[in-house]
Length: 156
Image (cartoon, rainbow, N blue to C red; front, top):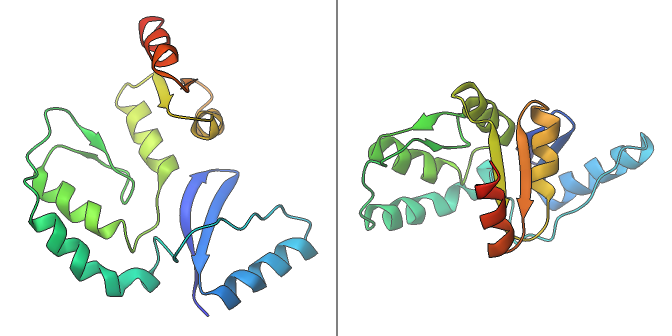
């Protein structure tokens, strides 16, 4: 079966995507080698070629949306680029369906561009912990509520 790296989250964490038999084989290999493996509760083999049949519908849906050049760079996770062009943004959003998420590369691009503080807005602190593994020199703050987000923004 098909098995690919779907997310490159940090030097210490990747996510695999693929057919159920391939995922089961990976779980068995991880257990044999005493490597932690957690199956995610997701509905599909996202960020892999197994999603290619859905790509035309995604492209069509994106064509119906007015996407303009952003006013500031957007860090995308297909190539790890900073995007300022609407056409490239549209292309990469659709490719994300069948391409790995290169979170670590995108974060490194932001840090090279001068970003020093990252605020995780939403519940939990998974991304904040990943940030510290990717680049220990940046400040990463988890802000799980609007008040926490305001506090994180004003203290930077």
